[in-house]
Image (cartoon, rainbow, N blue to C red; front, side, top):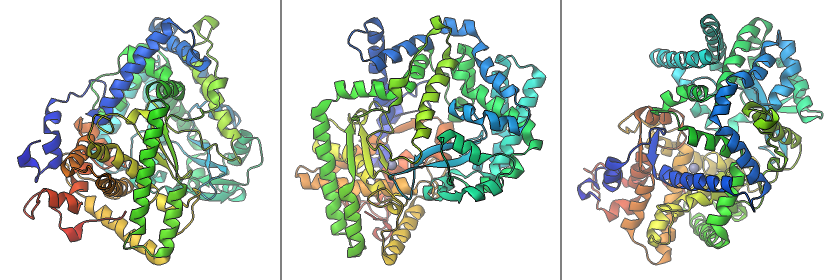
Length: 633
Ligand SMILES: [Zn+2]
């Protein structure tokens, strides 16, 4: 560690050497501790896949399906030979549409096959009653990653230019003439422009309770005269639907002024462009690379993935939980699962003590918070159950006249049909939202549940070779971070059953809201070297980091072998990240997580223990006056 940097830039002091030497892979936007682990797992899974390919004896039937799909995805000779022919199926379906009525008739099939339409439905847990699932309705995403890009004329012109250039190349490869391409892109952009004013910004979308807007059948019908939204909903779930949850009221209020016969031409062009982009991955080597060009440009990724990796991920992404379960069971195992579960419960215990001794909450709210904490369900390593659709998947293979688009449609249809059948049913809370092989963790407020996939349980987060303090500063803080999400500005609105309800006394809620505002102010406008942090966008994650770090520090101290420096250093080192400028700036606009350098530096500056341990003084950059520190949990 560079000692002279400790008081000015702790992140740099800890990670300076790593930052100097780290190489961003050409097919990635950044390098980080997360990505290092991910690349290790990727290598293991690639090796495993080629081993499975050679010898399928003893493999379960779903892994065999994964291998069969992989053999299709990696056969680029066949893919190149088929050219764009597989896409004709999609193009024909869209080209046949002559008016909105036609789209209405085709809508159910398009939805089930995930053929892009300008708006759509999904079945998700009811925010008001987490034991039921309801229908949500909303518009598709914009072409640019955030509404803020459309507001600044210069940025907008540059990015729309980039979009036009990369999409032109793609449509040329599909065989559209120059005139057709120009018309398609101009019209698609014209439709995209209509969606901009009725789309939420990343900041607005970060407050997810605002996505919950129930509207009665009668009201939906009144607002959507040009398209029979309710009938489409009922066809999909095969039952009567009395209410939809509208993700964005602005969109449904403007529905008839956007979705109308006059606009049908540009809606159709938008659909052709959107589907040409989304199905590009299933076609030739050239087209799959061109399909990713815009995304790469936005993130500053130098080149497309190699054919080998691309083919692997294409198959893996369809079977991620199947492959993930194998990884979890064989490389993590029941013993580690039990050990880590114990560690999580220890963190919950410390959290419990912290809430009990909390100085700003009244007893009544404390009781409720503790109730929520004590009912938190903990999932570690790998799931006990997989989503049911894998058992229904069948891979046809080229030898049976299939191609990758047909395979995709078949699989997606099974997934979507099962999803729509869940309408009005209780959810299965054992199903995970991530594969065990993913380096990440999450809190699900509707299930009041935390999930730690096996992949994150490695160095520098967790290792038996690391000291206890290092593990607490790594995985301990990550665990407590996820627990804190139960009490961040979003999570705090849900009760112990995962339903939206206000369990706070008025006074305590006011105090909490004031503290959340302080957290916004602490991060808002702070310079990172490539732009400033948006305090409002990142508030939930900053609350979770702050609570997580405090709880982990206490747990480490309780463990008896605490070493401040090891703890702080490992916290700073898990956030090491080296990114392209484009990617760093993109994240500042769209990512609810704070920039890595601030997750390390600002969170530590915000801790009295850190300040005291390193004797940080007012003149030091790492200094934050104690009365400015924000402590919530
Ligand atoms: Zn988080």
